[in-house]
Length: 177
Image (cartoon, rainbow, N blue to C red; front, top):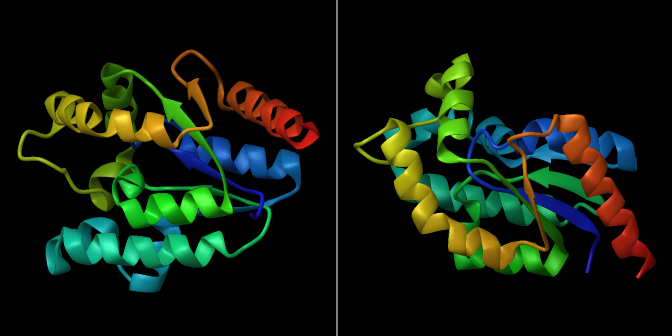
């Protein structure tokens, strides 16, 4: 098993921001799976959903996760829905540890609304959109996130540096065991 560290959770819980800080602190490479996927596809996730459908996006996501999982000792921020596919969960389990970053639906909505790029790059996942969508998706995903997670951290009240510090302490403790 390689020593990769996967960050999972709903969008806007801090996976990419915290992942960069953790990777720097641990002297590892950082990958944002969504950015890697968009780079290979040559278009945004929203455009993939619009042009090719969610199924094509999920297939590309699995290919991206499989490729990134082969890199040793890196930190990988996964898209919010990545762990919903069993094949992805198997790849993740076989190649590292998983940290689930959480926040309340209200906090997630505030963060999504504050990020001007989210609307351009990320599609709504239900017809509801907004807070109702976040609640619906979280209700469906949280049991899977919890099942995948080796560590869970609430990101709502902590700065990215504080979250990263806790993750690094946990990684170092795990390495000593």
